[in-house]
Image (cartoon, rainbow, N blue to C red):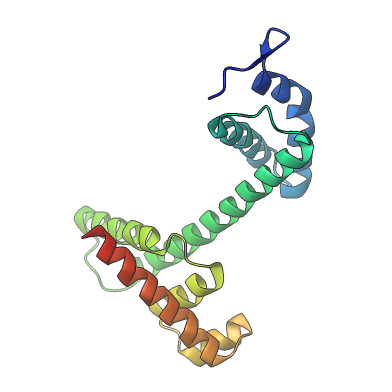
Length: 172
């Protein structure tokens, strides 16, 4: 992290004091939730601190909104994946499976492994893959629900399969 000092205060402190309240208000308006806005405001400044040299930021609000927007996208993606997990867990629990703590732990580990494998996959491709594998939907059903062609569904699923193979190969 940069140790640049401006008038006795670090640049990040100056940036925080000047724009924290504004960024929180902007995020709360976008998200409609104060606690999410508070979390993302904090995460935005943490991300900027991780960047290191912040002395070259000429338009602080534009930089803050760009960083915060990217974090909002990450939040939405994470919540979408969590929702799919919860639905998958609910499905597993309603079927005639072993409901032991060991089985539950294995299911959670499997879902975490799936999340890691799907990291970096475009949203539409990931959604098509999860609908196919977790919801057992046919390609035609997926195409209809996503408002795309069946051939696009096939391309998305193939894209995810290649990505997973590459990720699996990289791990071994």
